[in-house]
Length: 269
Image (tube, rainbow, N blue to C red; front, side, top):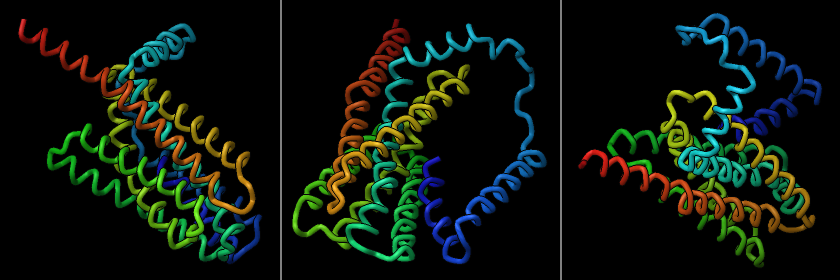
């Protein structure tokens, strides 16, 4: 869910380079068919006992209420969602900035966009290696969110200055999306882990908030875009990155600490 929105424009640009706009829909149709085929042939059912009452409205509402009232689940879901908004501000704003403001070609833009997608992949790979070596999710989240926030704020400063250009913005954009590869897996896991019996509902909440945040960020960038600077894109990125860190430091992490203290007190008694 993090990499796909980043590589899609690059793939779309390549399709447009060799065909017309109708080929985009043909590519989507082929991809959808291949996905359906792979699910039908290779994805086994993991549910051993089917619960016919699982989708009753009253039960669904109760389960969603339990997830949303859990400060750890909600906090980490917001961390992930708000940082997804930061990334989507870039997704929505980068074509406006790179093509219209800086005048790069569509081919060059495709490669620039691909470099940020590569940043997410590297971040995800590094996160996996560090997790295997025992680095805690709290340390990874703290470092990732701090670097992401710092890079986004620096983007605002550069965008408002006379040195704003492709070569000064791209390293910060790659660094910001690199952090997405570290933050997202840890935030999603931390949102779902406290409620293993309702993992599906928790995952649905995570996905819904993520897409809602992305839509809000995209709309803000389009609304604030002035036609000749990168300020709208970088400002919305900074706003959502700061909000993501605030959700972590002000809601998710304190709730997690309280739970740990309660468990320790119960164990000692």
